[in-house]
Image (cartoon, rainbow, N blue to C red; front, side):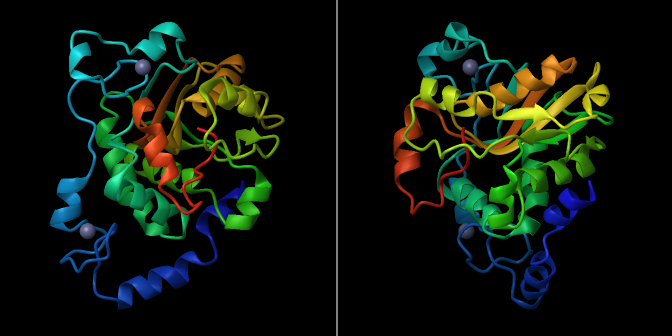
Amino acid sequence: MAFAQALVDGAGASLRGLADMLMPPACMACKAPVATPLSLCAQCWSAMPAIAGARCESCGIPLPIAYQTETVCLGCLNEPPDFDAARSPFLYGGPARLMVLALKNGREAYAGPMAAAMLRAAKGMAWPGQLVIPVPLHRWRILSRGYNQSALLARAIARQSGGLLALDLLVRTRPTPRSQGMSRPQRQRNVKGAFRIAPGKQSSLKGAHVLLVDDVMTSGATASACSRVLRRSGAASVRVLTYARVAATDATPYLSDNTGQDAHGEG
Ligand SMILES: [Zn+2]
Ligand SMILES: [Zn+2]
């Protein structure tokens, strides 16, 4: 626990925090001047790609107008996910994408406001005493980056919802190749067998209700792989909360307009 906690805290966090305090407040997404620290400017606020209106009851993806009467998307109908439900406040794009990249690139303080937005979208999915578990990174990747952005979000969510943070329960057994450009079946193969429960930790999952936290969900293959492992070890339910969601039809443009920093895991 101590090792993971130290990685979450990140040695660079305090220096960055100090620098931020000395600078005039800037919009979290575009860096324009704002009145309040850790806020968005009016322009970015109105450009946030919020997921509002009809959404799939299962995976939370926005449903096209034509499907307004359906409650489950075609993807979930054809292949029900292994988690009970998933929600995200935003699509992955515009200022929401910039927030994800900023958190990944060292803006630890963004985790608080991002977690608050996630909990607003979580309606009925998060409650005190629930196990809050981040999607783990492989330790090689943690070492190269310094911390796991999903763990930062999970910690902020546990703090805000009264959940029980479990950082070391679920582990990634091998680094998985970046999944950019992969099809859904390829993504599923990519994460197959990549997660397990840490030795000796299985008992804490018996009958537990789990809130699985990640920054971005793409195909849901990662969340499903984690959910299978958690359920096999006795979890009663697994709900997934991510900050942003790549809508299936939008996956290609959102994932191709980047500089390599968008490779946000295995989707
Ligand atoms: Zn802005
Ligand atoms: Zn769905």
